[in-house]
Image (tube, rainbow, N blue to C red; front, side, top):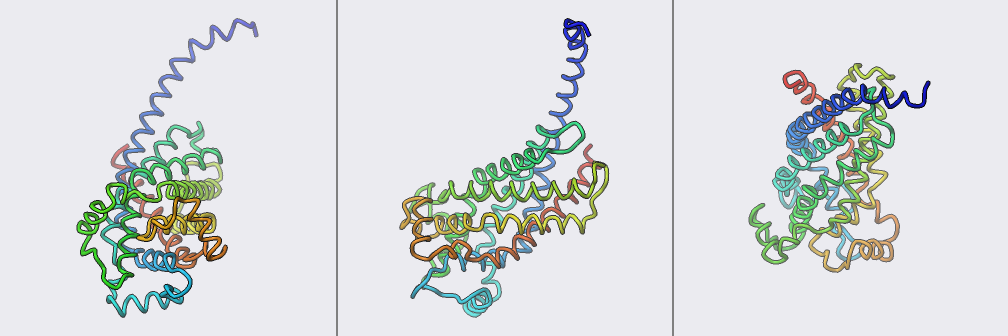
Length: 316
């Protein structure tokens, strides 16, 4: 072909590229909005189902060695909590997570759909690197805009219940005390650790989920994945994230507890746990977290996929 030919070909192609680019951007924006709405509904339903496992996990992660140790495992934690506070003691702090789970899930899925719309390939798939980056972006977004304040307040509420004379009488009362004593930064502790945790969490989960879906579809993007299989894929993705980042979760929990002031920063917290409690301390609460996260992620993806199917039908 004549070397100058491309100069004559490209002008004819550019309008097509502009039109398709605009259509892709509009489609990505629409999916982002759908993701926000479907994600918010999903977050509210999911946390009501799985909260007791989150409560037990947090209690075990806050438990230190020595005279201050209160629990001898999952069953002992459940037994003592129910004995002292009744069955609904396992739901202490639910209001905090409920207020936070809706925006958290909305931001997570909205961000993922937005990033996916920008990075999706012409055949409708995401590259392995794209899956990781979209998941990472979703995790960092939710950490900054929703998870850090929500998790900080939740951990302080659960930590408050461990004291002989709990101070927090309810969500707004507790938040008021925290802000009065520590300022707005009091509900924004552990941001670095939370970004690391949520970023790695969602990078792993979305990567595994999207990879398993693509494997099942075998190149046919129109092929539907059965809901039971979506749930199974979600459980596998959740397990992968637990084994991949529980140490970060332990550090985050310590940085957000009522005794966080004894740590200078995230690195200092990590060093102190290593020196005083050993390497296994970084995997405290793994079993209850594994149960919760596998159930959580499975339920979340099933509910989310169901709502997105409905939205795609009534909202093309």
